[in-house]
Length: 315
Image 1 (tube, rainbow, N blue to C red):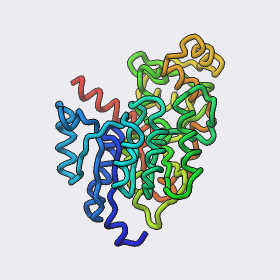
Image 2 (cartoon, rainbow, N blue to C red):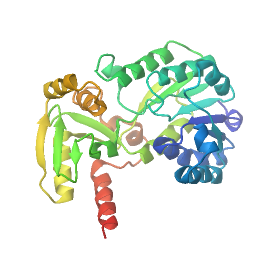
Image 3 (cartoon, one colour):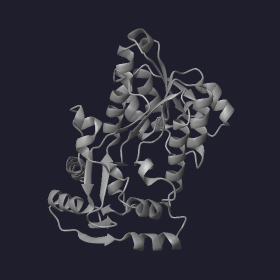
């Protein structure tokens, strides 16, 4: 793709949630400088009946020169394909909110529309290693998306593997780290590792990957804020917090037994999946960010900021 082709590009970003906005905040100024047109797809309600936060998001997108359209991703495949036909690149930041099967449907619509380049919603673990049958249905669907993309030649694809959102480690309902109750649970074993990245870093690195020349084609690109074992995570948390935490391991057998009793518990499914270890982490030294000299937020820096923000809010 030469420079003049790049100038004519029209990109569609699906979603303006936590990750979508992180991407758009990085992509917006860069796109404007390169004369790339960027459109953000949001839910029809966000456009037609904006509330407080929606109003702020729409104003921010407008300030960045990003066009906004309201469209329901639950629409049928043909309607999605008709919409996607207008764009050279589709960057999918929609997440799993639209329900099971949506990511496969969006991918099929992208391929039907013959979009030149597609970044699927794969901002997570290494689904090639996880494969099918992890006990996590969304992982199975993500693996199927990869198979579908690899089965065709017309649409170029780039997968950005980011690991877990760093904040998810500290989500009380996930219950790996509970700062309020001062508990830490290792998933699988203390030696089991996990790769984590903040949405802000994902937004910045995805934009770099998107705009890299010569462009990246049909490749899984790994990024990481940190790759850390649960044992090392416990050490970092106790040192930064300056407090002892109650620590225990939930073995894979324990987590699977609990999941068998509560098959509809989404967090139980995630715990069992991340306890597998394989596919949930990769060496940070081999990532796009380290190889290209981009600094990212590791767990220690993230936690220091989080604790600082908490203490400031309690003042």
